[in-house]
Amino acid sequence: MKPTARAFLILGLTLATPAAAQTLPSPFPSPTAGTQPDTAFADYQRGYFLTALRDAMKRVADSPKDAAAMTLIGEIYQDGYAVPRNLAEAARWYRVASGLGDREAAFALGMLLLSGADGVPADRAGAKAQFEIAAAKGQAGALYNLGVMALKDKGLDGFPDFKTAAEEFHAAAEAGYEDAAYSYGVLLREGKGVPLDIGESARWLKRAADAGVIAGQVEYAIMLFNGVGVAKDEAAAAKLLLRAAARNNPIAENRLAHLYATGRGVPKDLVEAATWNRFAKAAGIDDPDLDAATSGLTPEENKRVDELVRRQAAF
Image (tube, rainbow, N blue to C red; front, side):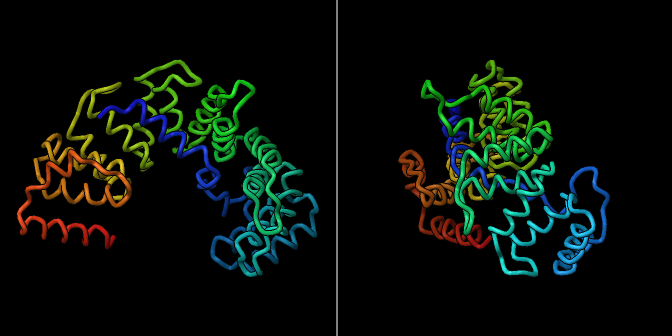
């Protein structure tokens, strides 16, 4: 398992796409920091969305600068809770609340602007501006997205701004966004935007892996297997790869198949090797070495592979 060249490719593919940038935690249902909980948010959390909308509207009528209530109204319109889904109306409420300093509204508006939506034209510069507003107030998703954009948007030299990306990912990770811990760990290991530090990289990748970030599980498993930045532990690597493979990660499926084929970290088991190889192949990873290693299975063993594939596919 040689991680370096492939590891950064994973980072680029994961982070430098609008779809990936949108896989961020929803800012709701919790009020902006410093806002006292009230019936609007309580009703929202209990699923009484129409009542929550009415309560929030009353709050705004009573206090035209109640940004938290405006943000909640925007969320209800965005998701179509209790009212027809209306993204333009959601964006209108988010924009006003963002102007009043609500970081969650700024983040939510940035997400709508990032790729555009019904009634909301795409505006990448506008999205970045909103993320910067939210990030200045410590919003973890916004910090992460600014890191994504730093990798996506090339500078005058034609290269991504790795330094800014590293800074934003670090800040997002410190704020609790675990995908950022993975991204920062990879940049540390590659020496992109920060001095290369394998030990520190392993620490951040372990944190991402422990938090259930699939890419982090794969990359930290590879470090464990090779003893890079951490004590070598093939059995622990195999356990992590199994967790990631069970969540349909093709790279983990392929690597796990190799471990079963060679008996590294797990007992040698060509049926298991063939099973995971089949999943990896279905996802587009062809591996002639694994095909050759499992080509001698008996008809009975191939039936077991078929059964294991059916069981796993059912989950």
